[in-house]
Image (cartoon, rainbow, N blue to C red; front, side, top):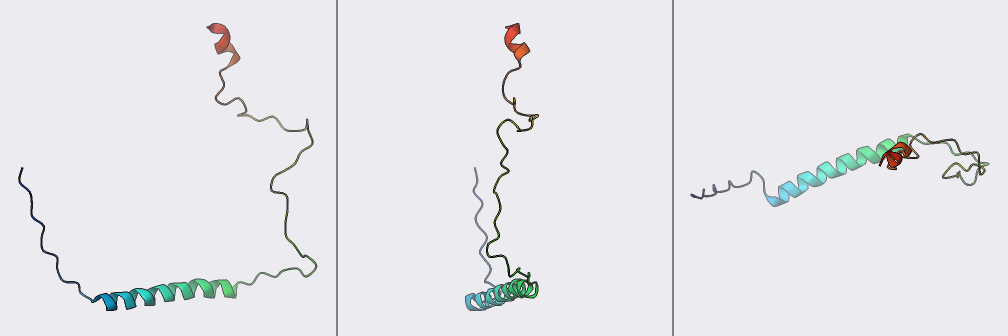
Length: 84
């Protein structure tokens, strides 16, 4: 098996400092765009509300839970058990 030799790497078009400065300018520009967008869209908060919270899940009284279509998923059918 013959091994191919690596091609020599070309020198970079810009120095490390130039690349770092360009990336910093890009990061600051995109960060400014994101923060500027959030500053312009203010959401009014009602003064009479101190906490916005609600139930994390729906609570139903026992016995009133609706039937689920996939409640038997993964369980063998009753007909399959009788046929064996």
